[in-house]
Each structure stands twice: as C-alpha cells, then as structure tokens.
Length: 526
Ligand code: XMP
Image (cartoon, rainbow, N blue to C red; front, side):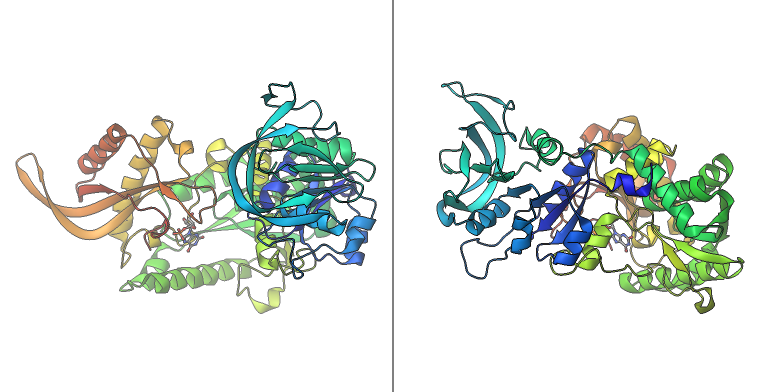
C-alpha cells in the first residue's frame, strides 16, 4: 500500500461554519474514506489538485436567502462530482439551481420523523419504521430555521416532514443530494448508513482508510521523508505523543530518540510507568530528564496561576533544549499535532487548512539545530489516533487515559506549589482513580482528578483532633471540553473514596466534591 493509494479516493467537505462539520468528517472516515475540511471558498487550482470523488456541503449559521450569504463557487457544481448538501448546504445548493429558501415561521430543533416520498439511491431500503401507509420513516435530528420552499430545477423531493415538506431532495442524474436533517449526528439513527451510502454507492469510494492502512501509509511516508536522519520527540506520556513514539519507532527504530521531562508535577508513578512501557517494554530510546528540583525551585513563592503556567512552560523548554543539545545529528523534530489542531490553526472558516504550515509547538529549540517537523498524526482525529495506538500495541489504559494538562499538578495545587503538596495530591488522586477503575466508572467520565487546597480544616481521628488539608474531587462529563457537566457519581462510591483518602493520608482532614459545571467554572481549578 503506497501513500498515494490510501489518499486516492477522498471526499472534500466544504465548511460553512456548522458546529457539526468535524462530525461529518469523522463519520466519513469511519466509513473508511479519507476526507478533508476546507473553507467553502475553495479555489480552482486546489480543488483540481485535490480531485475529490465526492463533496459534502456542511451546515452553517447563515441564512441562504440573503445576498451576502456564503456560497460555494460554481466550479464545485460544475465539476461533475457528486454532492451531498446538509442543512445550510442543501439550502445553498437549492438556491444555486433556482430553488427558493425561506425563513420558517417555526424553527425545528431536535428529533423529527421524516417520511420517504420517492425512491432514490441514498435512502432506499433504509428506515427506522414504517408509516401507516407503509412508507419508510426515519428518526432524524433537525436543527434549522430556514427551509427550502421551491424545489430547484432538475431536483425532486425525496423525503418530507410535516413542518418541512421539502426535507430531502435529489437530482439522481447529477448525483446531487440535499438533506435538511443532520446525518452526521448519532441522533439520526440511519445517519451512519446514509453517509456510508453516499461515499460508497454514490461516490464509488472503497474503504481504504483503515487503521492498518493508515499505519502502513504513515510508515512509508516517514521513511521516505526522514531517510537515515535522526528524529527527536518530546514524550509526555499523553495519547498523542505516545502514539507518535510507537509509530516512529516502528518506522525508523533507533533513529528515534525521545526526551521525557519529569517535572515533578506528574501523577503517582507516572514517570516510572512511561519509562517502563516505552523504554523497557518497547525498546524505544528514551532519555529521562529528572528536573523536579529545577521546576519546584522556580515555582517557589509563586501563586498566580498564569505565572505558574508560564514558568512551567519555559522551564520545560529549557530542560528539553538542554537534552536535545546533547544529541548529535538530529535533523527532525516529531510532534503530536492532530487534525483538529490543523483545522484550528488554519481557522477553517477563513483560512486554507491545506496551505498553512504549522509552527513548532515546542518553542525555543537551539537555533543551530534548525529542525524540520515530522507530524505523522496531522491528518487524524483523536479517535483515529486512539485506534492506531491500540493497533500499534499500546495499552488500552494509556490510549484511553483522561487528558492531563501540560502544567500537570501545578494547576491542581491552588497557589504556591510545594513538594509536600504534590505528594499528598498524588496519593489522593491515585486513590480516586483506583476506585473509579474498580467501579468501572473511569471510562464513563470524560475527566476526573483530585485538587489540593492549601487550607486547613478540623477533623477528628479516633479521639484526636486533626487540623489538616482539604482535597476536592472533580469529575466531569463532556464531549468537547468547551462545556462540561459535573458527573453524578454514586454517593456510595464517593463515600468510599473520601474515607480512603482521609484514612490513608494523615495530612488530609476533609474531602469535598466539586459540583460546578463549565461554564461558569472551568474544568481545572486554576
Ligand atoms: P479548562 O480548565 O480550561 O480545561 O476548562 C479544558 C481542558 O483543557 C485542559 N487544560 C490544559 N491543558 N495546558 C494543557 O495542556 C493547560 O494549561 C491546560 N489547562 C486546562 C484541561 O485538563 C481540560 O481537559
């Protein structure tokens, strides 16, 4: 399998700013087809170069019936490539071909039942039930204000709801399809099938985008680019850098050197675990820089959260640079940049993701090193990174571990960071994780951790009074970490955790549970 093959069949998603655009891409990838998200104002030369087998027009917040509404250039419609327009994407396509879009007097948000009213390649044979008259019916997710009120030339209505009689349209001759509902969200029960139909049956793509092929393709590309040069990687133990390490090691073996900076702000035994799994088990060359003292001395007396973050970030760069400077002949710096970072840094609404290069996110490397970047996860979503991590032999525990912030325990100890506090927090956090694991709750929450509060509270242990610190437990459920709801953990389990923490850690006299959602609170306490 060459790198050309895995990318040879692909779908282009033109983004009109929908909150669901990345979901469309993930569903297409899950169907085994490569796709990219580009700004809707695609230029002819990039379009021709990309040469997609199909196009998806995303939803978006604008109204398609104004003069200034965003429109895909006409080359998209003239290209002869099949098109699936979703929500705003359907409306703008309808306008393009002389249809009419009007503001609805009743917005539709949420579940709806859509009836199939004409046979077509996209929906035939699928349903979630039948109407009284025996028509196929779909349970779908709607989220729109405007709707198509006049069918464009050459199109026919293929599905209807009571409030949106034109809920789906198609022109089978040109292979143009429009859906008012959102097949990319899981609430649309047949959504996965519909997207699969579009990319496979309508666009004729095969399922080349699989974990095994992605790995093989990445290995070929890495070997081709890197040749016999040496590569440096900052290994944090997080999912992305771990998968990069495993992938590079498989591709170039000993040409890879990892630097793991132990900043003293890691979780219990984390440094040893990283060394055990990468160095001992996998035979990867990992240099461990024990920099606890340096970090803690620079953090001494500092209690402002932003200042703490800055110090931790800068100290990381200093330590990493020093270790990197000792290595000879390094030509490449590997990074765990993933596709959402690429889309974000290019600004998928205004920029052109495919022409903007990423910047070093490990800044300040010694000038004379002049490293080129190798970013083997640049095309992948987090779920794809996890899948290839498992395929590369990383443990489930590592691949599905909750996110851990770069500044580590530094932002989970309120105010000044001291070694004593780190040690107490590490123990409390480990108890919390152990109990979540045991009750099979670890994977059910998105992120959970303990926080150290440097205030003393009174308690009684046996007959003695205890004046000691407070630990707060935090567990949240979230999809995107932009908003989060505090997890409703079983009070029995919370009781076990709190008792264990107070019994096993004499420096703690009280355990609290954080019931703040985001917003207005943030997930981390600092
Ligand atoms: P907040 O606290 O902003 O956290 O609601 C959202 C997500 O980001 C993580 N986080 C960080 N990650 N460096 C990081 O690498 C940071 O400084 C940082 N602050 C927060 C946090 O753990 C959560 O997953």
